[in-house]
Image (tube, helix red, strand yellow):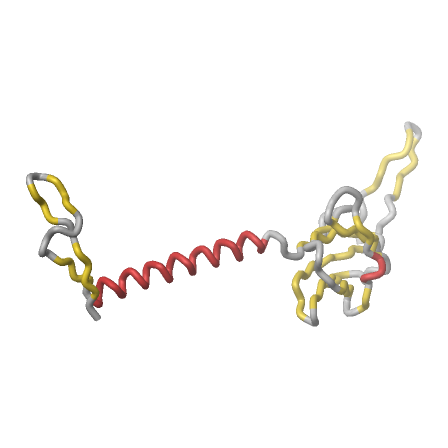
Length: 161
C-alpha cells in the first residue's frame, strides 16, 4: 500500500506548498509503524485508566487491632467499596453482610465481627459470586494477667503455658 502526499517545494529559499513536483511516499512499513504506535498508545491509556479505577476496588482492614493479634473473639473491621457496588460479606463461609454499617463521613463500611474461631478466620467480600477482597484474621486466646502479691504491692507475672 502506498499513499501519495504532496510536499512543498523550495523556491527562492521559501516553502511554497503544493507547487513542487516532488512527492513523499509513505511506505507500507511506515504506515504499519504509525498504526502500531497509535494502537500502543491507546492500549497504554486504557491500562492507565483501568489502574486509576483500581483504587476504587474493595479493601478490607482491621480497625481495632492488627489482623494477626486479635483476641477475645471480636474485631472491628472496615471495608472501602465503590459507592454503586452490591456486595456480600462472609466470615468463614457465614453471611455477615447485615453487620456492616456505613461509616460517617466516608464511603467506608464498618462492622464489629463477633464469634471468631481461635486461629485463622477468613473474611471475604464477594460480588456476583466472585471474591473481590479477602482478609485473614488470626484470633488468639484471651489470657488473664496473673499477679503476685507482695508486701510492697502486686507484681504482674508473665503468662506461661
